[in-house]
Image 1: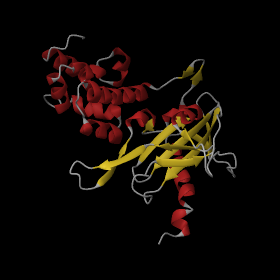
Image 2 (image 1 turned 90 degrees about the vertical axis):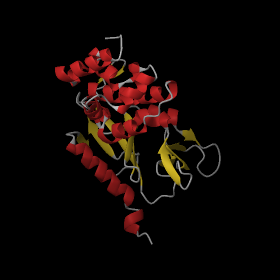
Image 3 (image 1 turned 60 degrees about the horizontal axis):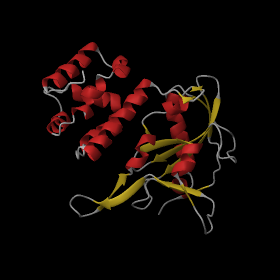
Image 4 (image 1 turned 30 degrees about the vertical axis):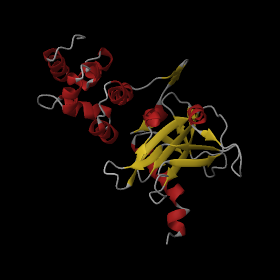
Length: 263
């Protein structure tokens, strides 16, 4: 039987857990004494401006299929306001601005929660053996999944936020996975798992240094889609600062060997 400590106190413990991770990343975080306005933390950004953050967490004990279901949230658009969603069972974190949350969430039209919003990052399906149900992430929300809190440190300029180059590369790694799956019919499940666990940059460095190239490289070459390989992403000029000359050289030589022309 679950105790008060393990039920009602879960949300507050997760708030402090996530705030602790933010502090480890040298983010200036301020915690209000009360959160009546849906503000669990206030963050001072690198340009001196401040943003408000609400943290929502789901425990590992929720029923199967609901690991990343966040329901009955009262919210209207607020400038400089962010949501941090965390699933303890899935060990996944998503960050959305107020505008993004309104765009992606659904709003209840009737019942006791009329007007409140819900967002569901995961689904549930039978495993490959058809023996049991397993949870999986909806791909439409993959762009909001994060592995650090850099999104809360972006510096604003007219036209929007400046994304750190490492974050942009990480997003591009997820994009080539989706394109390979949709356009080349190659579901690189192990690849996206590595990206989720280790981040895009570290995954790329591991794969390009694999002698002879990765299995993914071979599979995409067989499908005539070398443009969707990690190597093709690494050699893009905008990401040159992330890799050594030796790493870029390895990628170019591998692509050239297999007939890639856009060098």
